[in-house]
Image (cartoon, rainbow over all chains, first blue to last red; front, side):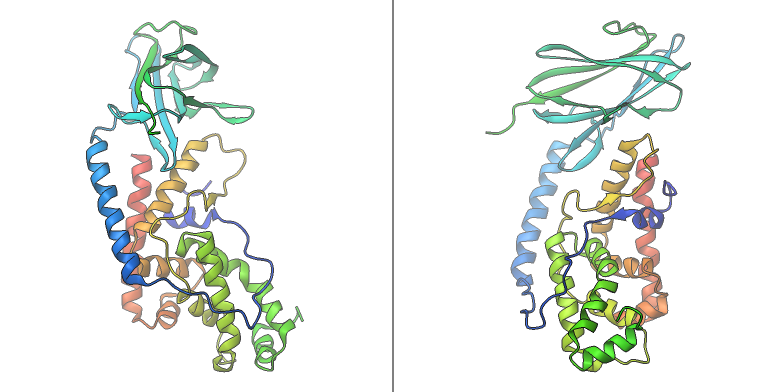
Length: 185
Length: 172
């Protein structure tokens, strides 16, 4: 694993596809380049549009974790969204589009089994029970990272509980809610 | 052909030896392509830039000074070749981490933050940083980019500081 705080170490771990196997023919034409003025203009327009959208759509608050109340089992539930923009922490209050994929990171203090489920417009879907310790860890299955797709519009809730599937007492459970809007046609 | 040095191969390329050119390509295409992927942000751009680089190796082979390292010369051609994407291609780069890592989202988020961070750098800062990762000293980079070493050091410091700030977001 790269040194978490060393960007150089991380960049050295970045890998890409292989280069074309064969060298170019000597008489191959030199690749043409775009007219930078036009590209720059288009790029600036895109950047302004993107910045405007972000300003409107992204609230400043970053509620990425929620803990169960003290006194029972302290559950730390973090939710990550996986999208075309990459993996990001779930933002409180943001309306996500149907098809949004989620991944989960959960901790329990003291350590023990934590059940995870999602309640949405179509009812409850169990995501299994996972042994957890005090350090938040991704929820994985033998196939890899556990992900869940918010496949329809409406209000969704994600629960992590040490009290068993479907049981969410305040001293042993943490929950997150997500609003999902309809994707543009 | 494989046992010959870069300099010897370039001497043959200057004489029109295609096999020597292919050997140089086999030897250098992978590190150059890796550099170009991180610099341009798109596979198609990196392929174009790699093609342009090697076409220039051939076309300007008579300008190559056999007393100087081939690596610095070819990276100079690569640093000047192709174009950069405004936004990196999604999933172009993957993080190579041990299979035992149990935090895939860490790797995903770090990769995304890092790639975004790389492409938020000024193109010249990014290029300088990537050249330093190829093992070039600031003085060599200054020679490659026709800049003063002090300018290169300043760009390197700025690039590292900004990228470190990106990673700190992950660990906040």
